[in-house]
Image (cartoon, rainbow, N blue to C red):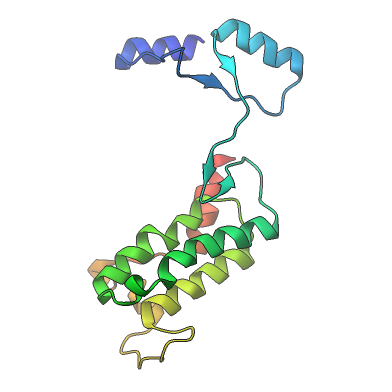
Amino acid sequence: MEALTHFSATIGLVANMEKSNLFVTGVTEEVEKQLLSITGFTTESFLIRYLGLSLTFQRWSKMECHQLVNKLTSRIKNTYAKQLSYAEKLQVVLAVLFSIHSFWVSQSIVKEVDKKRRDYLWGGSGEKKKTLLVSCEKVCFPKRQGGLNIKGCGKWNVVFVGKLV
């Protein structure tokens, strides 16, 4: 509680006790009760959902991961998404498909999303394949090196999930 009080005094922001809840995991019921009495918060189950799946601090099962991949890729399979320009498709890749890096998923799922990202950007996967003028690896280079700064989901997944540990 001291840290929260210090934060409030320093930044000037105060937690709204009516809108705030404490999510506790990995501790005994006794410790949870102590935390609730010290902080004054109420507890609530962690039922926040994103793309139809509950957010969690654990790795998802393979089935849940495939549900997430299907939700992400359904957004790029509609007719409108196929008619976008290359620059617009790049924004979809960066905003929608790249969001997988922030989840606890297996490397096989990350590779699957990377493949779907490449297929969408270059018109693969069922569509008539186009002749590529530049390799995927070169497009992933930083902009100052002539690329489009698309980072691989695998590396970002390791970095982001490592921050959560």
